[in-house]
Length: 385
Image (cartoon, rainbow, N blue to C red; front, top):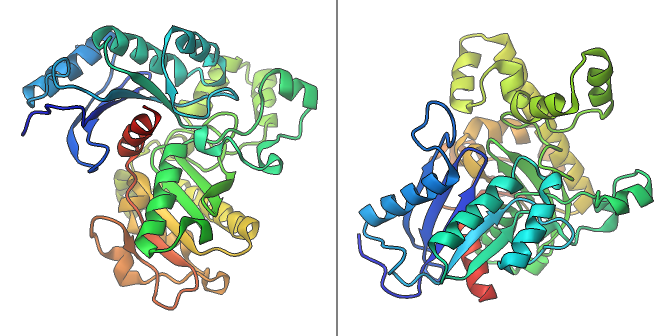
């Protein structure tokens, strides 16, 4: 592996509550120089006690692959931030004042923002002479139409506490919608698109002319589709019901909805490969979990077809969306009269890269488009600088 020697690379850091992912990316060419992840940070069974230790280990791993980050001339360090609130909706150069503002946003994303801020602090100490840039998951959806962004609650209360639908996975939805336009050789401004980001976290968006008009996640990444461990949409009354009758505290309910719900809560398993094996063995809980996941997904697809009025393309992305042909087939089954006709052979073909999986005569084109959030973050950093 060649050693970086000029300002042609960006280090992208995604610091989660118990994990740290990192990637060294060439923004211009899109080449991934090196990447890795460190899991179970701070857990009893882990040898990595803190995010400080994790980032030092990441630096060591990169050095073993031929990259001395302190000497290779990094263009920037890009930090993925989940929640930008109302204030942050552009890539932002990080200084002490920005860090203070990001800390204030922690109540909006208590599971996501604090570890990201910690990752920023550690990285700035290790690389003090390199520009650090925050890129926000919510940024792409900042200008959602008011009808889509507004919750029907007391207006003054919502304004006082910054309560609105922010949307998440924005970096992925933005990137994939742009790549779909490139694949189709069509101007982005002419396309109406539905993007389905299906992984352990899952979200859907409706995009008209490159601008999002709807998305499934809301104030937090909990709303919307059924996910690996997150419930997605639930009646808000469930929370008060459990508080009053099951003697569960707010923190306990929030933890359950985020970590013990979704496919895991229904089937005891969140990995779709193992879930498939359970279904094939006749496990009724796994079958129900899968059907609930697909039902919610189909409901959102139908809603977004209605929101857009006319749809040109539906794109599947992220781990499940890119690799699970059965999910794609079941999500779109029986939608011929709505303009969607899959080609079963194309859908089953495991080719890499962006590809068409709809029939030639399908009025709506269906694509599989690999996402690349690291590259999108790196390019955001370079555009800012």
